[in-house]
Image (tube, rainbow, N blue to C red; front, side):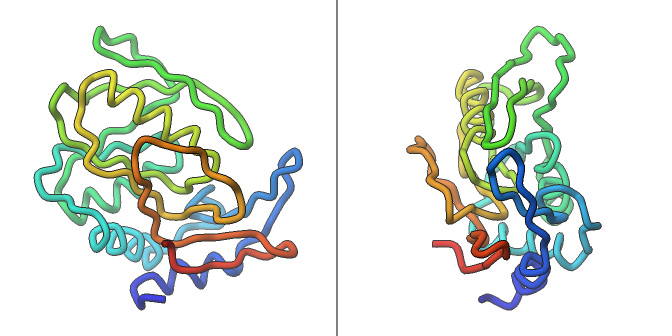
Length: 188
């Protein structure tokens, strides 16, 4: 494991696992904001993304509400690339794009504002599991003719099948739940 990701990996191994309607879900600051997310873990996330994703010429980081926001914020502060938050609330702007997301444990509508045709963006989220959130966000970006430079998640659930997706998803670490415990490995 690369040294910069060790604070993240260590904290994940201690995460509790809960059952959400038959879906084994780990509770962690990266994915839930509970327990508190330590600054060294946020730094590890930002540093890990910077080493894996080309941010040259990126106009905006795009993060879905709620759990992509803190990762996008940390990366924005580290790179000076502006952050766009895809919200769960409509503001009714003329160019607002609404999309529906379905995840392994729920569904909701998301609203994209602040990205224009031709903008080069990097999508950042907490975890890649069902792909529902990322697919919805990328669909909204494609509708406004933005260029998706990369899609990155902090974690990828290695123990669930991800759907076929038009964009490669870069992840920092793979996690899986084995016998009620979170196991962590380097992402492929």
